[in-house]
Length: 306
Image (cartoon, rainbow, N blue to C red; front, side):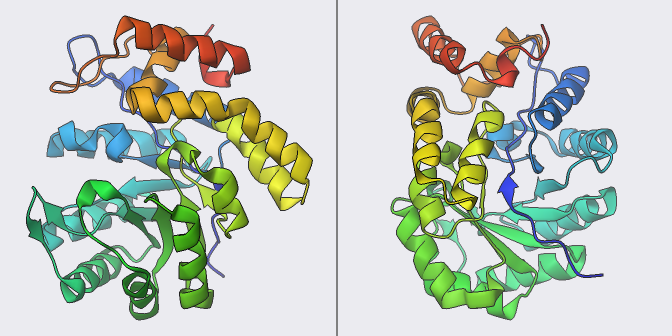
C-alpha cells in the first residue's frame, strides 16, 4: 500500500496542567476531542508548544500512550522526539511508532547554547531515528535550536534518508526558503509545511507549502484559508486570512504557547490555563486583549465546552 501524503492543518496539542501544575489527563482527552471537532487534518503532540521541555520522561510516556489511545486513529498523530542524544531520540521515535504515531517531528541535535552537531552528525541522527521508527519524519527548522539548516543540508537529508520527507520551516523568510527547498529537493520533499502559528501562511502557501502547523487556538478558522487557496479563490483566501490575522499576530507576539490554554479554559475545554514554572502566566491585560480578539472571530475552542 502506498504511503499516505499528509497535508492540511496539523496543530500542536497543548498539555493541560492542574492549578498545582500536575498533568490533567482528563483535560488532555478533552483537548484532543476539541481539536478533532475543530476539523483538523492531524495532531502533533509533545512539541515545544506542548511544553515538552518541562515534562519528565515518565510524563512523556504517559501522554504518548494516552494521546494515541484516545485519538484511536481518528486523525493521524505526529509525535515530537527531539533530543541531543541520538540514542534517546531513536528510542523515543521507536516508542512513538509502536504506539501508533504516523509521523515523527525532530529538531536537529542541540543542547544549551553551544552543543551542536555538524552536518554529518545531523544526517546520521535522522538516519538512526528513521531506522528505529520506520515512519516518516518531519524536520523542524526553527530558531529555538540555534542550528542553521541551510537548504542544501535539508535537501541532502531528504535524499539520503528517504523517510525524512516533511519539513516544518519557521524561520525569517520562510516563503523564500520553502521555494528554494522545493526546487532543490524535488519529489523528495513530500510535505513542505510552515509553523509559527501560521503567521506567514499566505506567503508560504504561495511558495508551495502544502500544510501548516499552528497552535490549537483557531485551526477551524485557518483551514478555510488552505481550502480557498487550493481552489484558487484569491479574494476569498485573502479575506479569510485577513479576518483572523490580528488574533494570530497577538498570539504569536504577545502570548506564545499560553494563548491556546487561555482560550480553551475560557471555552470550557480545560479547567486551568496553568503553565509550568519557570514559564509565567499571562498578564491580566494581555489575557483580556487575547480574549477580546478571540471573541471577535469565535473559534470553536472558545465555546466547545459550554
